[in-house]
Length: 332
Image (cartoon, rainbow, N blue to C red):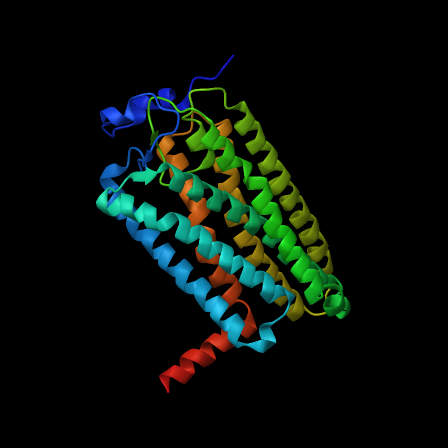
């Protein structure tokens, strides 16, 4: 039995007054309407304050990471190359989403061009897939550095790091490419209103007035093949890392290494937990309040780009020392 189109299921939740152009049948709408956070429109300005703060920290922090990496030759190593890749993905994700969110919150600029919406959707999902792959690569780097430190430089050569980086990028590009292609293909429903702050894949295709099982099943395949496999490899890596930590000879070394691993795990959990919640809610959690779902979907895109430069930058001694040198020099 074909599922009722999402636009009809949530129509009673949408406070936005639709114009006649938004209520006619169309194959490809010229624009979509992003509602923001449905049910919380009266506090959009207040919600924008932490969102804007996280955006500024994310952009400033990741640019600082890239600047320090470029200026400091001693940081040209596997872990730092992966950290640069992570900073770039965080910048792309932040800049693809936050400016439009703030327009919605501040000036109620809700319209987004159909092609722009699909482009935003592709960039978000493509680069979050890349970010997941980078976390696996960083877990591998930590595994080799802790479990086989004497061979770290011979195992993770620049050539291997480049191949891993290329594989991560190509995987994200290829696996997410069908999303905008399928989304452009579907005929759409009597509304072009998206109850979101950005063009999320399932939120867009659920507006289609046809059977979207291809998109839904492919989304399930991508998430389980990307997040499922990545989480598995990360868990295996950190199990081995923790086993190696517990046999360290001194408590000082144990606490230092364990503290670094815990901070890395916190960043990884901040990325995967909201991502999985948002994904499962789209497919199975129809009883979850819409405003709560949208807030978690925003946390998934906002918090990791803010946390990554703080955790990896502040807790990495070489980066912290170099940053202090820059500010000390400017202050003298």
